[in-house]
Length: 183
Image (tube, rainbow, N blue to C red; front, side):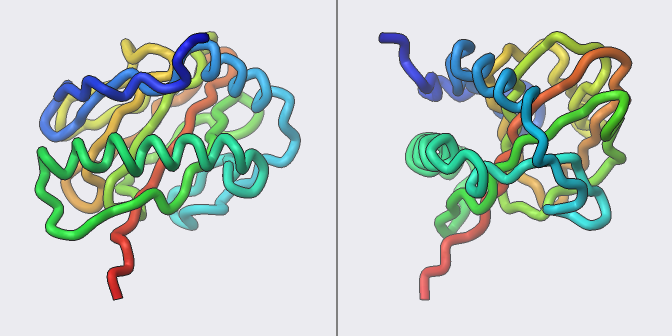
């Protein structure tokens, strides 16, 4: 049986941007296919200033949400804590699917996330444009494989954007974290 997750080897690809294989390609392809048939997309559910065309996984794909949350919380966050030394524990707060297409959301202006640590998983490649870019770090997800995860600190140093889509539909997962409530 093929492994669902591959998040053992986390490597730096730009200043404080890390990459790891995460979802296997079969799972990522299946999720992209499911999302391409989805009709429940909403605009502005997560960030009013820089809203995306998205679907919260916890509401509509709870099993997938729980699987990704568990892997991110138990493997990715401890690995990033060894690199960044958070000082307080973090955990997944939100996971949502994002869609870019010519007839919905075409691009996303430069912004920072409402997240402690952010992650992005590319679910398909049958589109042109719609690159996730980090201008300050001079990095783009253009060559990131389907199912792979990028992780970065969100609040200050990593503004990012998505360039305009030219053809096809892009599907990706966005992961936001928050600090655990220790009280």
